[in-house]
Length: 137
Image (tube, rainbow, N blue to C red; front, side, top):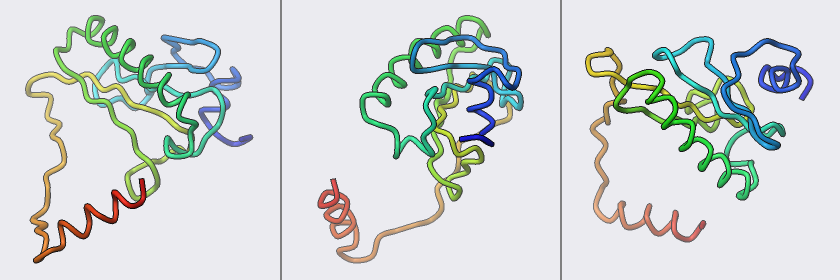
């Protein structure tokens, strides 16, 4: 996609701080990190989101993200990380090219996971929702 920032990074048209590359994937530091070492893992081929990415490529993304996560922890001294995937604008996706975030985390870094809102299922609703999901797999 011509105007996609990640496609431009992959093609070398925009600078990046690359940490990994193979035939299918590239990983580079996020320029607006949660913490230092925040890394983005992206397929070289453009897909709008993980949901549109072929399963074999998603599997490769998972393996490589796991490998890079260990390296991020070692390099930053972090003892934990979040791996984030946003699919669609409502989830917070800003750049519409499949990408996975590896965010090193430190005790007291000031970031918190989202807090669940007080959502309860009505009578029989949880069974209905579970069935709808199962029926669509």
